Amino acid sequence: MELGLAGKVAIVTGGSKGIGRATALGLIAEGASVLICARGQAALDEVVAAAGAGAHGRLETCVADLTDGAAIRQVVTRCVDLFDRIDILVNNAGSARVGEFLKLDDQAWLDDWQLKFFGYVRMAREVLPQMERKGGGVIINIIGAAALNPRHSYMIGGAANAALNHFTKALADEGGKLGVRVVGINPGPILTERLLKMRTGLMPSAAAADEAFRKMTPLGRVGKATEVADLVLFLASDRAGFIHGANITIDGGYTQGLMG
Ligand SMILES: NC(=O)c1ccc[n+]([C@@H]2O[C@H](COP(=O)([O-])OP(=O)(O)OC[C@H]3O[C@@H](n4cnc5c(N)ncnc54)[C@H](OP(=O)(O)O)[C@@H]3O)[C@@H](O)[C@H]2O)c1
Image 1 (cartoon, rainbow, N blue to C red):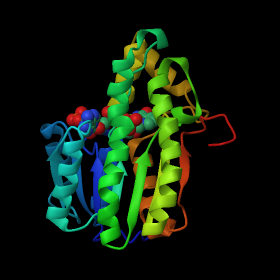
Image 2: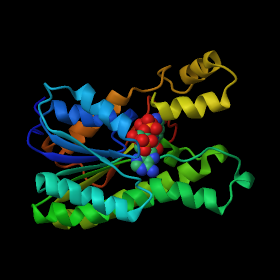
Image 3: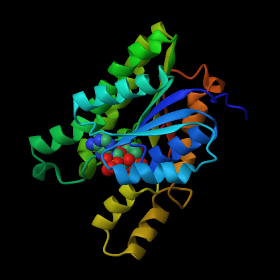
Image 4: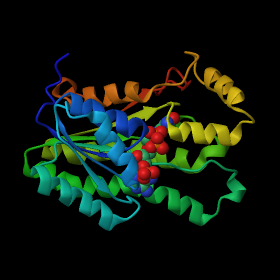
């Protein structure tokens, strides 16, 4: 399917690993230019090396801690300085800790929401005027199926995800007026560094973690970062031009409810 992404300009937050990395490499392969940001330069450099000299689009990097509003503004300024436009924003950098409710204090909640909730809100607020300036764009929020599957052990992340599902729908009303489509993606378990860390922290051995992964979805496996990236690429393209204000689940059947 021709996606028509060649020549588009994208920011992918948390583009150095996992879903963000796969998305950035997918966009580059389609001929888009991409600015990826994360805290660690080494992993960003590794993505540039993985894209290789034969990459169709241009790949640039920016070190930034997106818990900081000033750093978010710098990422957006860098992208505009480099490319004079932003067509696609993939809000992806996020993580939240697992833990028992009574052991998580205010600071734990505030710290994790700083990235996963406020990072997305702030980035969208900076990028929207840039998209409006050029006549439109697409904002894709990588959220999480925990929004639809409340668990006592993952309340901080689950609640942030539920809030971001709401944010996506509400922002779509605003974005629609400016020619900006807004879409959310709720991945279930996807095999990235983050999932490995979360699982191995809870499981007694790698074999036990593998077995737990098999049991996590009706498909008998966890997802691949490239499977989420393929969905992002489609949603970023004009082929998905009528998908707006929707939160789309990609979870191998993990979510049991009717709404997802
Ligand atoms: N994997 C899953 O099973 C799963 C399921 C549901 C939802 N999700 C969501 O999908 C998104 C991507 O997850 P993933 O599994 O691909 O994560 P990952 O493999 O851990 O990658 C996270 C990326 O975000 C960057 N990052 C982390 N903290 C940051 C900060 N403060 N400022 C800037 N960048 C930061 C990391 O680089 P640095 O560490 O160098 O900063 C890295 O590039 C997250 O929002 C996650 O909640 C994932």
